[in-house]
Length: 357
Image: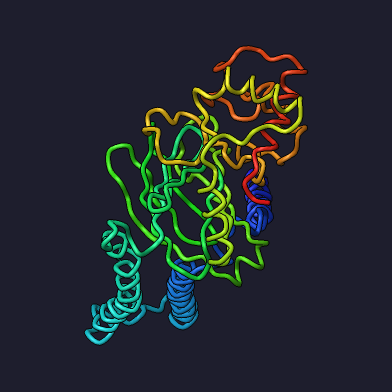
């Protein structure tokens, strides 16, 4: 009876695992590739899975055959004693080697292909690269994206063109993090002591299916709000990307508030928030001075703090108690308590920080 109870419990856990394996969001699935890197990795996954399933199937069939064919039929029967078979030994040595080669050759080829970042190191006569390069800096618990050629810095939302390679320099400012856009390609660590480099390509068809917005995650346990360290990726056609760059480059000074309430919010921001958050995209302040996300185009973003809906109500909640939504974030306690009127004014100012018309 005890054994039966254990088997029932095991069956229940197996069913729960099967159900949970189907949970999740489609935009966080690696099984819906939307770029060259993701597609190649997906094809390698299919190849390795096919090999493993094939080996399991063949071994299972041979096992069943042997059990049935050579089972003991009587107590007095002594099976034929076989001490070795050179043909079989050669066969089960050669076949695994061939299977490993079938898997290793495309894997090694793709590894070298994905590791080729030479174009991002080649400078033209202006001292810039001919390809798009983005410097990614991971922080507790937000992301900064710097475009060195365009002299733009933004945060939380990465903007990229579709159907071309985008090259990344990855680093961290505090602890180890990991940069991962599931639908676009495998993750890569961001370290404090060295810079990792790789490239990704964002497919226009996949971007259309995803509504032009991909989701990124931190894939390295980095602290209490690791699961909330999200960022978004806007994949645009090259012409629209160029328009976004031009729009960001026109912002030479903070956007002026239009309404009286927003002006009050701007004054509060200048007195309390400007020490950590910039509201201009120019590449001027050193990294150590950039301790909070750049808010130049905050009003154009799709999320607040990476996880909340981009609404005035959710922004007020975030300003009232950041720690309730991202425990351990550096904004908690960084400024004094604000009244409801001050929070409302600051909210109106921040939601008006828009670059795109």
